[in-house]
Amino acid sequence: MGFDVHGKYCFSIQGQIIKVKAFQTWNLECSQKFFEDYQLFVLAHKLQKFGAIADLRQFEGGTPEAITDFGRISQWAYDNGQIARAQVIDSQLKGYTLEKPNDGKTIFPIQNFDNVSQAMTWLASLGLAVN
Image 1 (cartoon, one colour):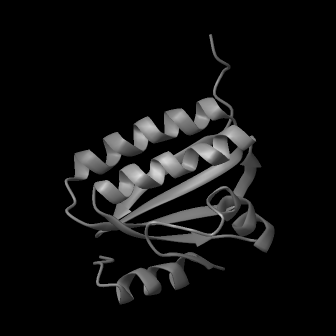
Image 2: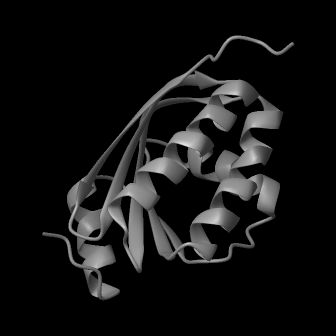
């Protein structure tokens, strides 16, 4: 028997870009639920390739288990067409926290930005449709 889900998120799509907003502090159960919902969202939109914007400005972090679980999510996303992730963050500490479990090694490019507009511009430069 696990814990209740702690943390929130929502998805939207624009062109070949999946936008994710994360809120609050996540536990492992939230990370696992997010993974299930992300898979369903990606598969429902039948994208051959896509990018993601993770808006983390209202994300308060997560348990070590939740943060480590993100690697599993990234591998599945890569295997299903994700070619890049833009992270919108409000502190370098968030960027470091999310990169630490992977020791800076990623399976697709990840860039940090101050706002969504910059993130969209970068993803468009990679050949992804943003409209």
